[in-house]
Amino acid sequence: MEARAILLLWAAWSIGVLLLGSAAMSLPVNNSSPWTAVVHAPPLARWDSVWYRSIAVDGYSFDPSVHENNVGFYPLYPIAARLLSRGLRAPLLPIGIALSLACLGGALLLIGDLFVEWGGSGMGLAGSAGLLLYPTAFFLAAFYTESMFLLFAVAARWGARRERWLLAGAAGFCACLTRFNGFLLVPAIAAYAVRGLRTTRAATPAGPMLASAIALAGASAYPIYLWRRFGDPLLYVRSKVMGWPVRPGAFWALLRDLGARLQAPEAGGKLLLVAEFLSAAIFFVLTAALFRRRLIPEGIFCGGTLLLLFSSGTLDGIQRYVLVLFPCFFPLTRWLRTRPALAFAYAFLGTGVGMVFLHRYVRRIFVG
Image (cartoon, rainbow, N blue to C red; front, top):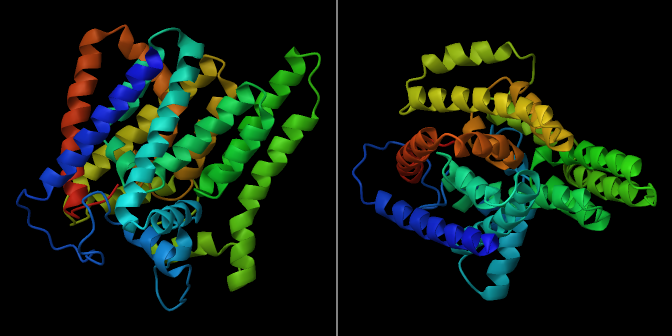
């Protein structure tokens, strides 16, 4: 019954986001953004969607004289969208959005199963609602990698928790080809393996070792491709430093980023700052709560991802990146379920702010 309720929630949310995205196109806005490369794109294909489209249509390319190149984006999502588009003989961008929504539906079912296991009946539906009501959740319906990575990340942990090591390894492999931080699933899988070996007499290390090896192979695949094609296995990182505000360094580099962003003249700059730093603070606390609840593998993945983000020299986009840290929504939802007034405030503010962000995304005012 809970799975059916989750699917109904997913369907209603998906329809609502698609309709709101279309409605946002009719609202007046003073927009001077140069990001108009795909002039007939659907509303939920903006900003980084241009890069994923270029990979799907033209493949990878790198020009050192240009600051921004599509090698700064991982391959699995655009390749899957291209294959589906060709197989179904349908336009690429709508197919990619449908792919994102399908991945989201599968991810919510697995998340619901895990949350029920951790917190009892009702936690699956409540946790799914908590995720979908987060202000930047509309990215899960966009021509972006968020939903696909979310699906593989939760599938890897779902399989490892149930000692289905082949599934865990395959999901980890795919996650590593979807997003850079997929490699952080490997220590999470290893943590499950150690727990299993301690608690199950019949357990052997063969399955966990295979799962870890498969996931590591996925983490190595894209750097190997870059090495063979362009002669630089670290080209992904170098391209980010060249074309985006990423400067790996110590945590205090974020203070310099804060000072620079406070003086940023672009539209929505102050609003983005609030969203970024609130997201960083909230998910830091929620990750600590995972460790307190002894959800160690989940805490390792979420903590490792936050550490990676905090070491990038900027919090730009963190309000979107935290969407895939699904375990954090478990302590958040559990806390909100005992506080109805705060749960209502979360839903009200999440929906309202989310609509503002969606409008600004669709009209190319800013990106998360």
